Length: 240
Length: 347
Ligand SMILES: Cc1cc2nc3c(=O)[nH]c(=O)nc-3n(C[C@H](O)[C@H](O)[C@H](O)COP(=O)(O)OP(=O)(O)OC[C@H]3O[C@@H](n4cnc5c(N)ncnc54)[C@H](O)[C@@H]3O)c2cc1C
Ligand code: FES
Ligand code: FES
Image (tube, rainbow over all chains, first blue to last red; front, top):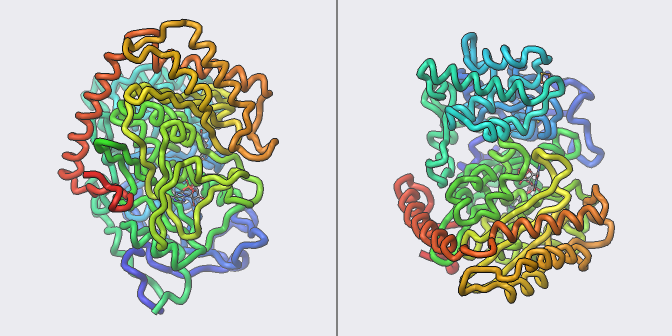
């Protein structure tokens, strides 16, 4: 087997057959075989830092979503699989501090990056507390995604206007509650933070405020916050 | 020795390796943000043998401000375009970007993906292509820059599409950037969807006024897979503006312009065969929507009087931006040259 070219940071792990013998693929639920598709799925190993812990996930199908890997491979079920088509926002997680739709972000894109899910926030988190207080009457399905969007908003605008709050909520569908309680919750979280002197810089957030440069081409060497050891992009050894 | 099996995933950090990889393996699918491709993959309708990720190529992401033009890298995200700097000099593009999906979608959805979304010529029926940026880019007179092993190709963005709405990219070709003439901020973008929140349009409209050349460009989109300019309305309007005084003397100009724009919906569009429209509303609704959008966009871009001062402000802003952007690029070690052929680069 030849060496992988040096611009192949993901390495090559080969492929696995679809259907029988899959170690983890729930049969018939996803990835149905299109008639004209190849019989095997191309896979790669993914390494990233999830909620501060470095993880390596072997055999990730190239088109597996980050949401699928978080939920089904890593057992982190905080982010929800609502629609799988970008409409509902239940799957929002942070990728290098930016909110992304877990369902439409290929897991590949998390290679060498920091991923933050709702599980990173423990007891006493003011956003969780405010959402619980104001939106507790609902089922809670939408809250993990909303929470992460709200934390991003507060990191950038510690005292957001009502229109900014509504805009940040607008990509999230909630089937239980109207927007009002969410707006109230964001206000309360913002006030609690101000009172506790936090000023909106939560531990896991990297805020990008408007005054910051537009030239945000990611620097592959250091995209994430320095809270755990980084996995270099280029350092994944090719397999096979 | 060539690899024995095609590589399932590549994430090059330079443009040339990306183009080489595409040429070597035609089965590779370009993936920028993935907001279109992943919807297909999740639904079991796409099973790529491999992805070429272009989200870590520094020269593809960012905006270059030069004297004559503004160059937007193809992997620049919609969230990048909402930035205050872009809002200041390309408000139509910034507003179009902001209308796309939700904030969490915009952090990944890219300019190149927006242009290249939808089917290829002769391909099957398109899922609704998301091409809202195209409306703004057409009005702005954007040129798409494409690159493959065969070389560079630069064409007007509207020319990227076949009559049936398919994207005319050669095999192995990447969109690397769009080039826009540096104009002023007398611009606007309007979008009417089926609901108040983010979502697909029933109509998009972009209006771009250039007081320097005294020209007005207007484009309509959302009614079909490809947006199109409504030239007759722009030409008519240019004659009814008092450019020296910075005023529109006759108040009825706004309504007449709006009516002319809406007539553009009836003209044979580049949108392709009848029925190709993504219509979810009646023709009459769309016609009225076009009128309202055109009138509002014009009132905002060129109020009845007093916009000469604005034009000056925009020029000063653009000047500052150029200086700051070049400085920051140097400071942060970002590529100083945009992803366009060397001959066309301006210092
Ligand atoms: C919930 C939702 C809402 C949406 N709302 C809107 C909307 O309001 N308006 C709108 O316009 N769109 C909308 N879209 C569509 C989509 O998000 C946009 O078109 C987006 O800009 C696509 O960019 P991407 O980088 O994610 O594309 P990808 O999915 O990465 O790619 C799309 C296509 O373009 C090709 N491609 C990507 N980059 C290049 C390149 N540089 N050169 C050559 N080919 C390339 C890919 O191979 C693929 O065929 C929406 C999508 C979703 C899921
Ligand atoms: S599951 Fe991702 S947006 Fe609905
Ligand atoms: S609380 Fe039930 S979906 Fe929002």
